[in-house]
Amino acid sequence: MAIQFFEEEIKFQLKEKNKHKKWLKKIAEEGGYSIGEINYVFCSDEYLHQKNLEYLNHDTLTDIITFDNSEGDNKIEADIFVSIDRVIDNSQRMDILFETELLRVMSHGILHLMGYKDKKEEEVLKMRKMEEVCIHHFQNM
Image 1 (spheres, rainbow, N blue to C red):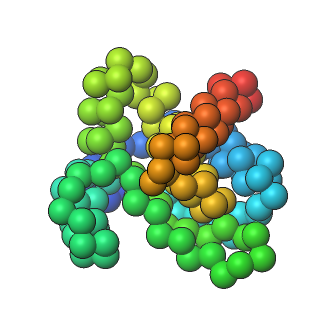
Image 2: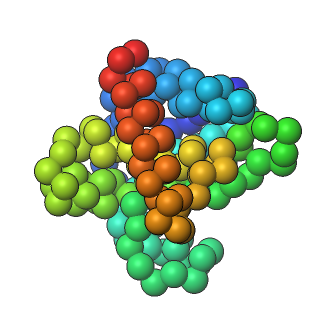
């Protein structure tokens, strides 16, 4: 298992990296998955916007893009890009702590890899509920 954290075009250091790794592993295991290799790349809006255009042909800002590199057998492998600019904006707009919004976004990526979707209203509700469960797990570790 390897979970790694990187920064691209932004000054950001994830605090408590080992706690985050244990938390992400716990999320996967509770869903019946194991972690192969996951790379979280924390970046700027501009950097993620370019990825969105280049790979998804979406001309929008987003807080996260998840590239699933898994090859089956319930082992999660991915590159997950997180815009710290969007996380800051989201947390201010929703009047919540930056750290809480970062946990929501980080868990959102791994939940997608576990099959959770967010296109339909009922899927969004289920995704939000699971994000809250994940945040609660982190806060109680």
